[in-house]
Image 1: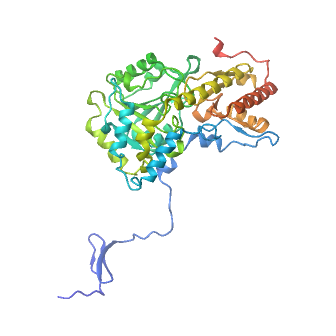
Image 2 (image 1 turned 60 degrees about the vertical axis):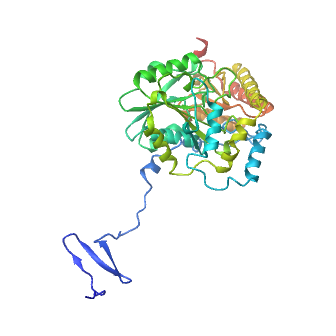
Image 3 (image 1 turned 90 degrees about the vertical axis):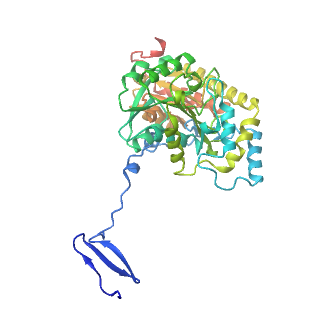
Length: 448
């Protein structure tokens, strides 16, 4: 029996039409054609906002044409060219390129050999690691993204330090996750306000983020303080996302959270960007420290599945990773730390003498936070206004801490050449002396 291709068969019960297309029959729903174009961004796109960009993009930054610009705002140690990576790191990359073994796709979680190299580098008796405990990522940012994504559902909440790295909120809010900010205490070198932290926890709290060493504070928690944080997490059975990208970029002891934990499971995020001074290479990792098999196979499988969404970590850098970790000389690390410590001391000592400013000496990372006694500077409405005018008058750009949801402070990046740091501090002093008003009451809490 033949089929009449010129006739469509209509099924009124479910409103399906059989439409003839090149001799084939395809079902199509009635009234499926849109009447006009209407393409909208997704809710995730609409909910994605980087607080730093929201602040900086709205600032009127017109430098003084008579003074060369000094940008103390960007957390990139390569900007001024005075902090190159080590020649051994470059050689490892050249060798990985020349051998032509790493031009293809790597496994979504990274090459086994490269994961083992990271595990070997960070393993310790208190927190042993194997290759299966390592996920390689496209920078530490992707590591943080995967860690939040595997631990949290829409409607959950995460605990984030304040002041803290803005990416946590950017990622979480875009995924429908509530962000609860717990306070750091400037008068205690930015230790966590433990009572405030614990007061924020409820049944939907799915993750505690701890940044140590800190961006933006440059602080380093003592072992004793880390133990107290772990006790809070243990008491409420909350896993920790430990952002340790500045690990070992310190002038004091800085144990990893995992090495101190007896029961709290930890996802530690790190990478090459800061310690090896190559942020553009985009090599990061997650170290899975699964105390008492609490994460189990499901969290691990979840991380693997999430890593398959985008094949992240660059294969060539993975090929160089073992050599980078094993062959970078200790002198390179020591020199970096010495430079950062020296610049921090210069900045701190210079700004300590400036009325109305309260610098807080850092112990690690690449940053120094400075409090502004706004009562002493009536010309300015906020830290954003203060730093904007600092650019206009002195061509020095510091990041207002409102970008970290912590007003009346600004952050200085201490990776600039030493002579530039001295010059910048001199200009900041000149700016403050011009606008300082001594008629207000003294609110310098650090003198208490």
